[in-house]
Length: 163
Image: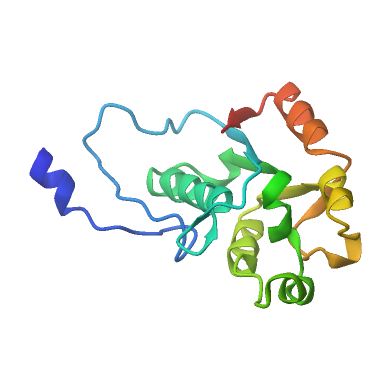
């Protein structure tokens, strides 16, 4: 099985270009087609992976793994609470250029995630602390009172916390 595993190619079957995976058919645990995947992600750092926010990258990888495993898209609901250092990927192109001198590298991935139904909520406590106004946000995120309220509400609704 070891050589078979190494022969697999990296792929991005659902979120094209992001969250690359290798699929292995003969492993002990696979996603279960009988389950609903209601997942809540806590994205709080500005750490990057492959040029985009690592938390967004992980969501892309999750969608790719579930998709390649045959989980129907209607069985997948993903929500993310965005705060802390990650707050800045919520900026629109213009504000991101003003702050960093370059465009927002996350916009394409955000668009792809939204097209798959991912809900992204940015903490208004964090935006306020960083002097970011709602008009400075990109079109792919929505303001929430706080990341804490998003995390609590969705976990109380039965969503599984994904660190």
